[in-house]
Length: 287
Image (cartoon, rainbow, N blue to C red; front, side):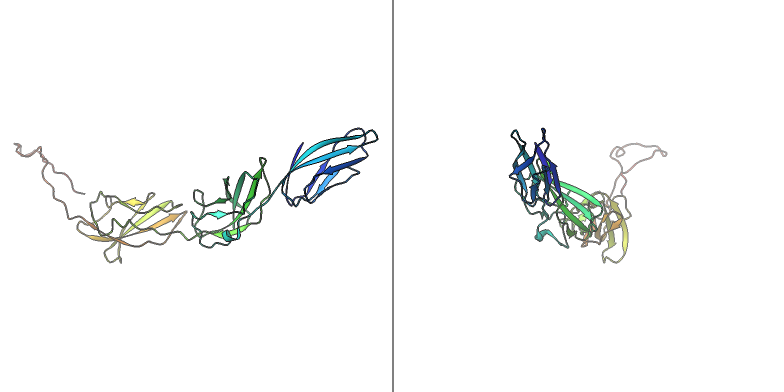
């Protein structure tokens, strides 16, 4: 026979026996539990976690019958003090719970700051997790609670712990692009930001005073092709990342110069040909 309960949770179990027992015993109970020898009811609030093999018996005038009852008391845990009240948590920071011996899994439940609405849960077989890979909002406060799993069952949540994610980070074009001369078709890349849904590339004049145009992308790279630009001109490019409906601050600017106005010529197929006055002759277009 097996029973599962949680440390700190009220527990009640009645020994079932036939032939009118007159007394009951239970040996090996976890701390906090006791037996009523007249009724056979085991009750109380366990204060000791673990797996307990309890010998229970029922006695009448004829004799005593004995069975073993296995009681699993699941412990509780919470984030360690060093992981609580962090005010600038990055998605890559690990948050660590106080480890518990004998458990197989940890479930980290992340609520809003009030602890009312569950935002997401992370299942781990180690006592730590991070926000990376989950849907979260920068610059927000969350309440984190932990459950542990033992014998296939999750126990109660431990005490909650408040953590606040960092503000939406900034990003800039890769340093290898800065100071370079580019063609309209050349892609320019920026480091991606975890959790960002869009990137806005703001292209200013060289002084950074006058915005010339912006390019919105769902990926962290862009090019001049498709926008109104001038050949042989230097621009200052700054980037904003977006999460939800909000764009963050611009990162550092990066100076980019467009190539000089290219030349073009008639298509080679026309050269050396004989044409009528009405025959069109074509050259490659310039963006």
